[in-house]
Image (cartoon, rainbow, N blue to C red):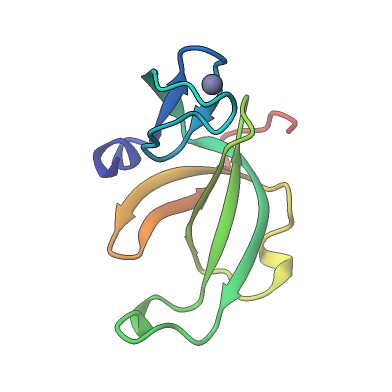
Length: 122
Ligand SMILES: [Zn+2]
């Protein structure tokens, strides 16, 4: 999962029966209960669904503030990825719906950045 995130992608597990995508490894499909899955790698692009600005970081993460804990809804799926975006200090910095993409992985988890190159409507 970390290596995919570093390449801007997201590894998912697709139910071979109903096609539902799962972010983490599951034993039974959350849609139909089947047990067969195949790996599907998605582009880590989407739009910001919601976020929380972190002004008081957990111990050990002081050097990262200000940042936001964001939820990115991936394009072409209902999947939501949580990650971290740097340099977000006020809600004006990050309107909901902002285009964004996975850009890496560090000790906080998935790193998400604004996707300035993507002008497509969400
Ligand atoms: Zn299924």
